[in-house]
Length: 321
Ligand SMILES: C[S@@+](CC[C@H](N)C(=O)[O-])C[C@H]1O[C@@H](n2cnc3c(N)ncnc32)[C@H](O)[C@@H]1O
Image 1: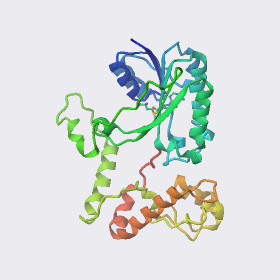
Image 2: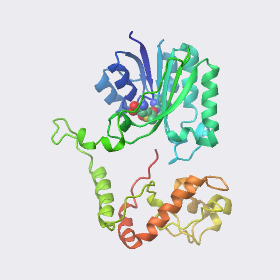
Image 3: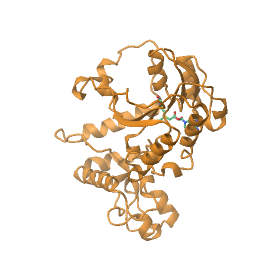
Image 4: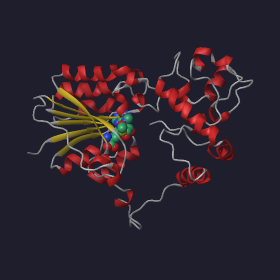
């Protein structure tokens, strides 16, 4: 049976790729980023609408709603504002509006795995309750592409829902272990239509490779995310946060990339801290404290190497998601 699906926050079209392969038809897509939208059109011959806030009324009837709504507000690497995020926090409401209007039989939503833990589980509870109030039975699984033979480790929270219940649904059983996939399986040495990486990206890669090459050979690669902003930073993060102490009262410490806070105004101090350390909270969650501690310990172990290398990344953009 051919089903009609819509692809909200379509990105590169992961949902489209999968559902088209299964014989289903895309009847609507929405993607804000014009370059992604252009690529989507090229790959799938569907012109995505732009901002879903403007386009939601144009959504046609459909059987499956797919939505990979922006993960930044829920990601560990972001500010964790969740549904209060001014830029993206309202987007899930549009998903609900569309579900309420068209009542498709099925829904498929993806987001970062931290969605489950965000706000001590209250965010996921809210999402579940709201979907259930629209008469969907929902379930959540955590899957990563490598489990199915695609050489990428990118765990995602996958939410599935069906109006007629999930009794017939089972999560797919992984077919691969991590040591059974290799990036070489998808790399082509001389592809015809390859587009070269821009010089800036090559600079990023080469600069990080320089650090890896300079580390002692017996140093295992970190198992925690590298937050280079912590290299040289000394601002308090354990018992109190910069916000709790007052940005104007921490000028004896160092900010992102070891920048001195001396003589700066409170506002300048705030701007000199990593974005994830500016939250208006009295204590950082344990996982954040752990990442900061691990990065500072890593820096301490390799101070000589890192200090010589650090200026090279001073103007790299910080990661958001
Ligand atoms: C997590 S990505 C989705 C990834 C997608 N599932 C895929 O397979 O590539 C979220 C996407 O939502 C888009 N987006 C953000 N705000 C939007 C909005 N208001 N309307 C439509 N798309 C939006 C972003 O540009 C981004 O490509």
